[in-house]
Image 1 (cartoon, rainbow, N blue to C red):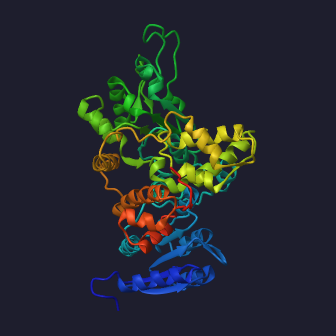
Image 2: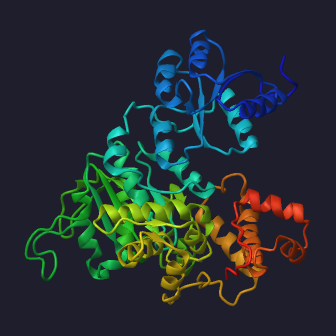
Image 3: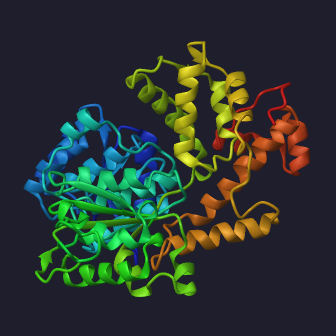
Length: 491
C-alpha cells in the first residue's frame, strides 16, 4: 500500500550498479512507490512482457544489452509505459537517441534524486513530455558527423535535453549566448538530426549584411523593385524551403526588416520586394544573438512582438567559464580535428590542461579551438606541455581578462549581473532545478583552485586562508575535481 499522499504505482528499475539501484529503490519506496529492481536488460524485458510496472527507470548500458536498443520493442509492446533513461555517457547524441526511440525523459548521471522522483511522479500522472518516437536512426549521423557539440557538464546537459525534445518539431528557437559559444553548431544540430535534415540549412548573419540590403537578402526582390535591381533575386527564405533558416545576430536586424519578418512568422508567407505573389514560407526559423534583446526592446530598437514570436523556445549556451570541466574534452577534440585537417597529430599533457582550465576564455569555444590549432601547428613536441601553453597564452592580449562588464565591479555586483543575465536569457521560463548548487559550485571551484595555487598546493594553509576545516577542503577538492600541485605556484 502506498503512503498517504505518495506517488503510488510500481517502478521498474534497471541499472547494473547495485548502489544506484539501492538509492533509487529506497527513495522511490519512501515516496510511496512499489519497486522492482534488476541489473539485467533481459529481466527488465521479461517484466515488461508480463505487464509489470507503471514506469521504467533504466540505465542505457547494461551487461546484456543497450536500453536504447530495447526501448522500441517496449513501446511496441506497451506504448503507454513511460521509460525514463539515465546515462553516464552524457553527450548530445545520447540525448538525441533517447528522444528518437521514445524515452519519456533523459537524465544524465550523476542525477539529481529529487528531480528523478518528480519525473516519476509526472510519469505516473500521465503528463507527457515532448519525447520523439519516429524510429529514425542516428547511426549515419554518428559515422559521418561525429559529435556535433562537445561537453558533459551540467550546463551542457540541460542544453542537450532541450535540443532532443526540439529535433523533430518546427518550433521557433532562440539561441542566446556570448560570441564563440557555438550557437550555429546548435542550430545545425537541430537541423541535421531533425525531420527537415534532407532540406537545406541556410545561415544569415545580420551583422555581416549592409542594413539597407537585409530585406532583399531575406525575401528576394523583383526586377526593377529598386535602383540596381536589374534581375529577379531569390531570397534566403526561398533558398531554405523545406529546411532551416538560421538568423544569426538577430539583434542587428533593422526595424523595417523586423516588421516583415514578424509578418512571415504570423502568416506563414511573404512576397518579394516589389512583388505581389505570396510565397509560402516552408522553413523552420532558428534565431541567435549575443545581445540582451529585452534591453533592446526597452531602448525601442527591437520589436517586442517579434521577440515573443522568435523566443518560443529559448536555449542558453553557457560560456566556457561556466563549463570549465568540459575543457579537457574540448581541447583533445580540437587537436583530433586539427590532425584530421592535415596538421601534425598532437596530444596534450594533464598540466597543460590545468593551465587551460584556469583561463577566463572571453572568446569561448572558438578561442579555445583556435589556440589548439595554433599549438598543433607550432609546437615541436608530440605532447603539448604546460610551458608551451603558458607561453602561447601570454602572447594574447585577452589572456586572463575578466568577462566584459565585470572588470572593476565588486564580486557581489558581478554575481548579480551574471544572474540577472541568466534569468533574462531564459525568457519567460524559469531556469532548470538545481540553480543554487550550480552557482555555489561555479564560485567554489575557482575560489579553491586559486587559493591552492597561492599556497603552492599546501592544503593546511589553504584551509586556514579559506576559514574552513581541512577535511572539508579535501572533500571539496575531490568533489570538484580540482588538481593539486605541491611546490609550484600556478598563478
